[in-house]
Amino acid sequence: MNKKFSAGLALLLMVSIFAGAASATTFISIATGGTGGTYYPLGGGIADIISRNVPDFQVTSETGNASAANINLIGTHQIEMAFAQNDIAFWAAKGMSPFKEKYDNIRVVASLYPEHVHCVTLKGSGVSDIMDINGKRVSVGAPGSG
Image (cartoon, rainbow, N blue to C red; front, side):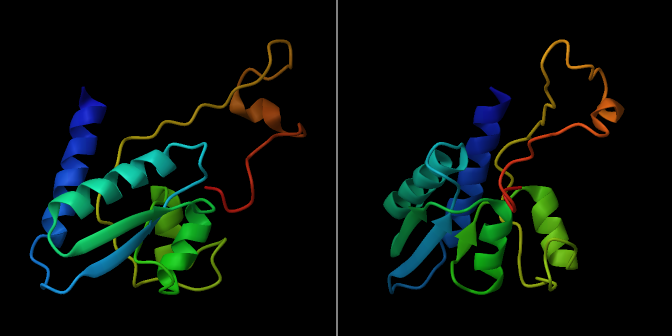
């Protein structure tokens, strides 16, 4: 219930942001994530809701290459809106690694949902807490994936 409420509130906030726009059609693209992830269908739903409910706005959802790449698209004005994890957006705004420059022109519009990260391993791997991964091979996802 809490996730649905948070998602609904985020959509309501996004729709209200665009409600006072001028009468000329405004086109906006949202960079999401890969088609197999969570961001892609969320972006499509948000684009559809805004396009159907906010006059003179046409919003499309595009596949993105994860948080860091999406922030780079926003920071270089190649796209109008993007999904990104909060830590990646913070690092971008501060100019911290992996970003080579400070993106102080980005703004948070809405929080989609609280995100929990789980570190998992196989039973019998010898890893029972985070300190045990020292010297082990780990998978952290694609570079810049957030």
